[in-house]
Image (cartoon, rainbow, N blue to C red):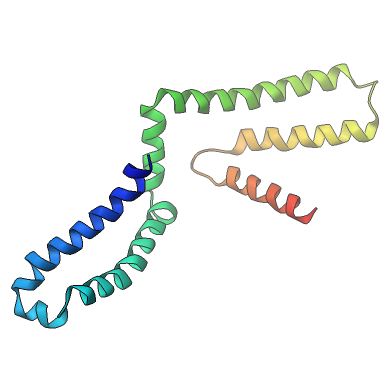
Length: 153
């Protein structure tokens, strides 16, 4: 996994730099004056290329719909991912139903404070399940809200 994920990128970069310099730049005097040595070519390319690649990667994940489209395709094409997504949604809905039944059964056995706490929790999740979709940000807003609460404690 490490070979195919990380090491191959390093080898591909070395290969690309070597081939482009010795087959393209070395044969054109105008480019040779800009990049007089292979080392300078590597230094300039890496100093410009690295920030550029980081910016492109950031844009891919955060600013374009390309990553969301990839995730949609993954869910559509991978039966395990599809099954996990459906199971998670079914578990949330089932737990809300079970919570409703438990509240009906335990009205006289728990304190009013505990009952209100559970009802608030139930309402919060019912609203989240009813209003969320893959096109809005309610899921990530919920996660961020819970992270802030944990950090405050």
